[in-house]
Image 1 (tube, protein in one colour):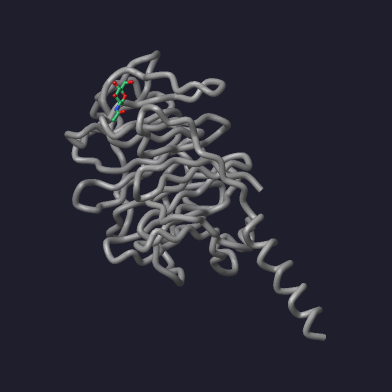
Image 2 (tube, rainbow, N blue to C red):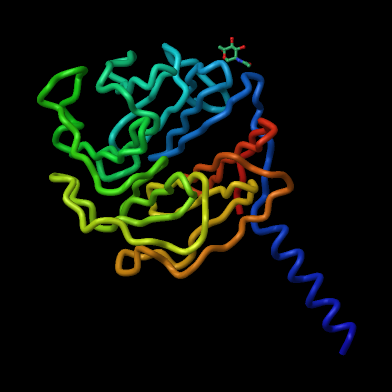
Length: 257
Ligand SMILES: *[C@@H]1O[C@H](CO)[C@@H](O)[C@H](O)[C@H]1NC(C)=O
């Protein structure tokens, strides 16, 4: 009886520790933020140089960025002056100012947060045509106040300055119309939605979580599961079976299960 319990316990521990197999990313450049989407991976390093992954090599992109995103809406970045750029024909074209975070993971629309935590959305029809600064390319203000948001096929997830979590389902990609935010249990300091709809986030203690049970009819899912990591993390992104994590100490890994 006791032996069986011990065996079961060991099996459980093995199951947990084997859930994700993490390998260090060859990181001679000190990468600090990643975004993965549509099979592509982009990153920035601690000197704010943007990169694009080709094979096992990080290819330097032009310019200087503190935040970068890739997804159905293309490649977008933000520089140290909080100016948001779209990647157009190999260069960065300025789109707007006073933005601190952007996400291209929605269905060809983008969302982002301004420096004063105002969330916004830019429709897919606008996104397609953006070649640079132009007054016709206005974004739409979203309700509430959030510091980080990310969209996927079943909705947009966000966290506010108190690390509270919110979900906006059914954002209309042609109008940015929505039914507002609903509060989700838990606390996270950043959150990323993958192109397949999976949701990953990190809390202020560096623990990594994923949301279980997300489907088109239940976009809020059922609950949070911890993704065991051997060190505290500050950033995560997930695409096509690969979970990219950056530790608080600046160590980068890619995990598969
Ligand atoms: C960031 O990337 C640039 C360009 O490759 C490189 O010169 C710089 O040393 C990198 N920063 C760090 C901290 O490694």
